[in-house]
Amino acid sequence: MNYDDKFTREFEEKFQETLKKIRNFKPEDRQKLETNFIQICNFVEELSHKPIKSPEEIELFQNLKLKIPKILQSLEDMKLVLNESLYRQSRAYFENVKKLAKEGNKEAEKIYLDLKSHFEDFDVN
Image 1 (spheres, helix red, strand yellow):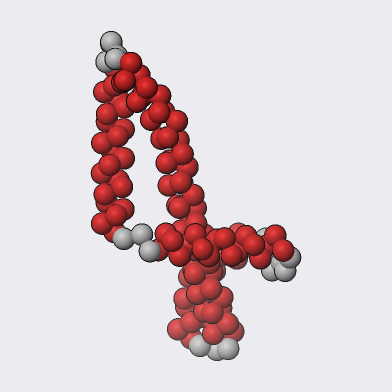
Image 2: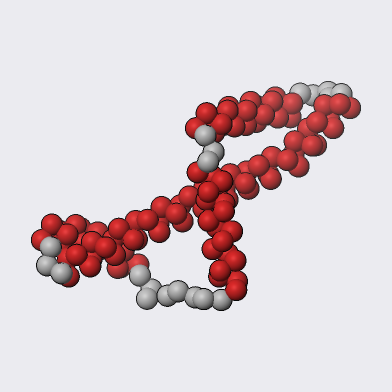
C-alpha cells in the first residue's frame, strides 16, 4: 500500500539521499573505517584494563565513550538503509516474475513458485 502524504514523501526523499551517500562510500573508505574502528576499540579495551590512568587518558576515554555509540548508531542506520534497499529491489523482481508467470511465461512461473513462499507468506496486504 502506497501513501501519498507529506511525511511519506519527506521520508522517502531522505531515504533516497541517504542511500545515495552510502552507495558513494568507496570500498577503500569502508575498509579504512573498519580498520580504524577496530583500532579504537582495541585501544579502549586496553585503556579500560589499565589500573592507573593519567588525566589525559581519562579524558580521552570519556570522549571515546561518548563518540563510539554515535558511530555504532551511524553504522546501524547505514545497514538498515541498505537492507531496505535490497528488500525493495528483491520485491520488485518478485512482482515482475509474478506478472510474467501470470502471463504464461513458464520459466517465470518456476521462479515465481520458488520465491512465492519467501514473499507471499509474509505479505500483510
